[in-house]
Image (tube, rainbow, N blue to C red; front, top):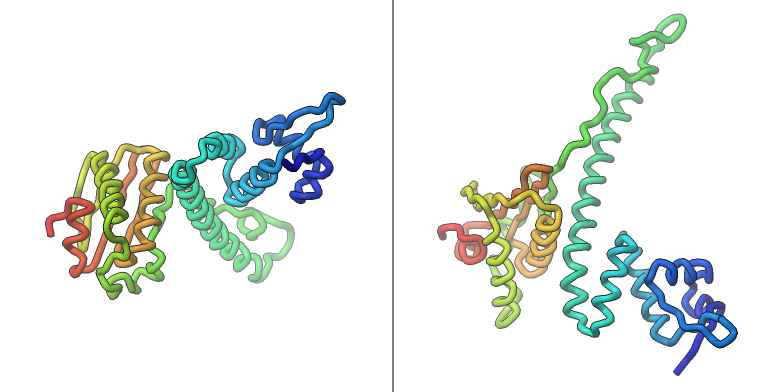
Length: 258
């Protein structure tokens, strides 16, 4: 069995020794001690560090990574994937929110730039000279998150032309159907909309993450579905649409009359 000193592990993994010590203090990377008090690590530390680095690239917090490592220690990959799905879905939702905020801020900056590019008034700055922005700042409220990769523009909806065929089969299809039915069962309200249904759930970031994760997974096998998730402090709504040829599958998963 390969044993590494901290300097050797740092060289082997490319992670600085200072970071390795920090990971130990944070409970992410346990270390043994020699009789002389030197830190030593086993070969599993290399894979553990690779997992930690990968999770950090996904934007996961140290607490979330520590939890994932605990699940990973059980030796069941399916359990790790099941825990990662809502975490990654949460990062997706946050990313879309940041993109929306940045777009709004960019539009705000463009307006200020246009104002500043015009002719300057004579004399000193005043309240209407454009140097001081008096208009309202971009709203930082909840934004709708479109989970369909086929939604390019409001008037362009390629999902309508995608063949209504699912690539899952057998046990996988049954498991996916059961996952949807369990989540849909938590809906407090249901409203038919053109081409689909709007489901209303209790306002919950965790539930939003689960819905987003399942919607993303569904897009991988059934690109004809169109999902939009709305999360506010008081409401969580999921809109699902599908072409007429997929009405049967829409009904099976979401309880919409075919």
